[in-house]
Length: 142
Image (cartoon, rainbow, N blue to C red):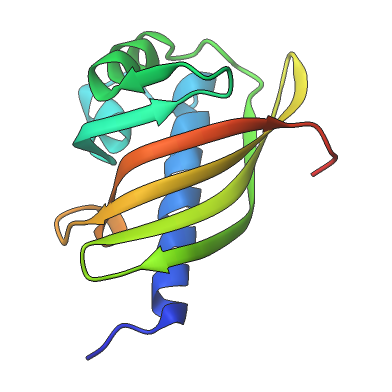
């Protein structure tokens, strides 16, 4: 059966939402600090994952994972809202999507506009694994 644009959009929304729930739960300490809980984050990222932070720094998977692991429970009030997920490209190997991420925590409300490149991987959650992420600060209300 051929995959429709609606199928791809639904899988992207589910993947992005699930991942950010995992991030919020880990950083807030709502998730246990176990290897299994950490794997939910780590496994969502391809081996060659790269990320451009809102400040413009380029990070690699080997930079991101230890920092995230060590940040368990560091943001006890954190909640994350994902809005406006939109697929901008999809083919048999990859999917590119954009979305806004709004974080609420002790520092107040912050926003990021993100573009993510997923590689398709049937073994990954929702069949997608992040290959590259680019975040940019946004200041308008979410």
